[in-house]
Image 1 (cartoon, rainbow, N blue to C red):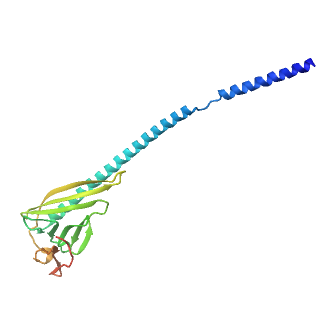
Image 2 (cartoon, rainbow, N blue to C red; image 1 turned 180 degrees about the vertical axis):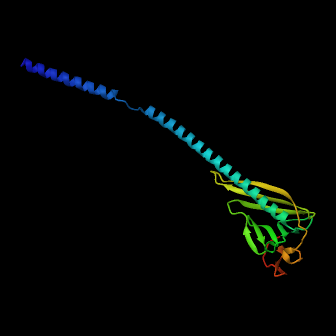
Image 3 (spheres, rainbow, N blue to C red; image 1 turned 90 degrees about the horizontal axis):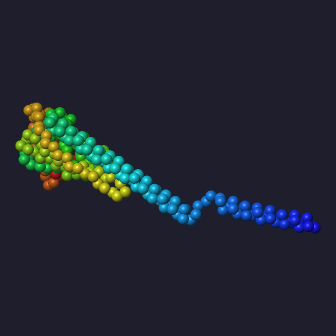
Length: 227
């Protein structure tokens, strides 16, 4: 009987010891306290906000640089197009000497180019060669305030503004004005596209009227262009 009691007491001591060991093992198991979890979330939030801000700033700078480069490139190209046409022309038909206008009409020696006209149409630059019409801009750039001035029939002052909408987090518009002075190099032929001398263009009641050379005859155009 004493032996049985000793066995029972030993069993109880063993069970108690095992329970204590299990509690100690649970307490020693690694984990996060509430304070540690909150501190981790705060650090992670700060890191995420900083990373997103850097990404947005980088994207804004890249889009802005692309927009500026597009305007600079297209503005230079437009000036080159206008300069080549003016220097190849025989006479500046419109505007007349000493005047400024939103329409540039050039007398060319080749019939398929007579006359060559540049004018603003909406937010684009319209090019007319005899009866063929085409827009010079074909991208997201917009043109405004196109103006030309005839300086004593010897040179032309060109001025226009190009704009682009930058799709940043806040909508922004970048714009720049381009100006140039172009000297005429006439060939002294004054053929007017093979017709000799057609009537000079006129601005009548706000509409620009001009003539083309068809089969040796000067024909008045029916196109409506504001002047």
